Length: 72
Image (cartoon, rainbow, N blue to C red; front, side):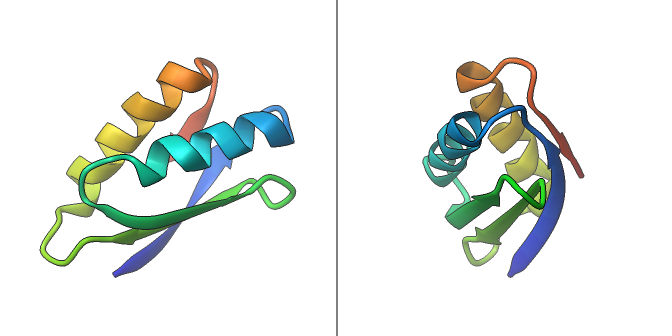
């Protein structure tokens, strides 16, 4: 399952760091961040709970970019 989320990130480099952090999160099969559109698209592993996974994604993203936000 794929879902798209609105994000708030200040620069393209930070967006790239967020993308890498999301990809390393358990339950995420793939992720991509579009800095210009301020969107993150996440593909979840089969059977994963998207809400719980996104909480972990946000936690991991805040480790690399403390002021980022993801609306879910």
